[in-house]
Image 1 (cartoon, each protein chain N blue to C red):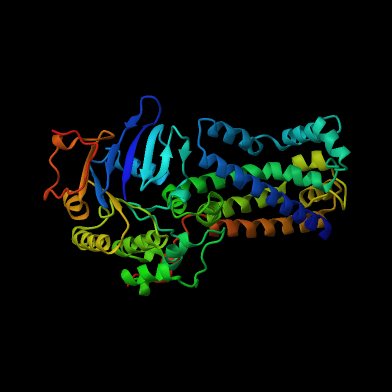
Image 2 (cartoon, each protein chain N blue to C red):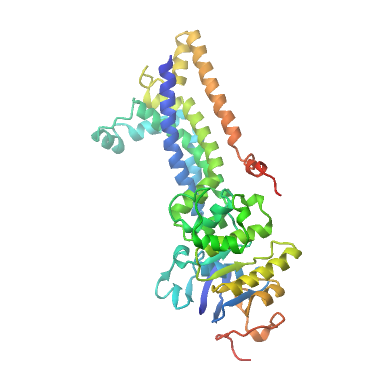
Length: 243
Length: 226
């Protein structure tokens, strides 16, 4: 699955932050790596359709999600992506079961508390061992459990791309390592490309083949920074200038 | 004796319904599309809470009277608002509206925007996001405002008297009936009406306090973490 991102977006008025990410990759596992305030989350929001850029384009696997010249700006609903928010953004008024089923029901009513689980939901509930947690509310769950519910909720809708916004930063050190391995295993098990945002070199090394460094709203050329070790960049970086 | 109470409940009920739906819709719009005009719009729409009821009554008379274009048009449609209980509903709605607006706007702003975003990414339409995420999460704050609006509509006097008048059995609501009873020196009737009104309002206040934000963590107490 190829992903081409090249857009610019000014946030907060004429003197605001200029976001200008530009990259192209064929890799299934890529990461945006950089300090906080670099524009990583905003870039992810633009890919998800939650933020409309000023100009440029975003293409995913031959499908145009955004193109200012062609006047295309698909809504988040039309893009069919999965988005794992930093704090997981579980619906606090719904049980884990209702959260997981949320995207599988498109009407004006939330899934019933005892709603049946379709195959696509059961698959992830089994994979993440969530059977015993289904009737709990988010505030009765631990950080790791919340992350698994949020992942199951995103994956149940069969997204074309999974966006992970600092998925491990809300967790303590022991849980971090454990869930990093779990996410890694998940990446190997599923056929969905992932984009990971992180400021932790260990996360980037474990969960991405291609790492793009980002700062001040731009993707830095690979020559100017050292990739997080171990350098595991098999992917193609077509926009990168040759050093 | 029961006629003014029933009329008051009918007027306040309809007024709460109108003010509730309009207040929730406007509050949602203001919180969803914030602009530098939001606060100005909010201030203008809050005016009925600050203005003397007689001033609101006068505005409504001018707006709905026969000499205004709106009033003439309504009359051509066969809708008579001045000196009818429908007029009382309009007056009470206008006075109660800001209470819903204020509460609902604060409640919507309190809803984590990320939850609405994640719902959109999951493929749920904007209208469904409102009914499935925003409204349920803001509901307690909104309900508190709606109950206050109901209490305010129930006690409406000034604007109602000016727009709907004081016609026993038709537009004489509870608070106007009390005024009339006192004026006529009918102390026993006044006492009775006052007690009925007080009890109704105490019940509403207790309900409001129970629904106010800060008490909505009951769910987490239902079952403790393992």
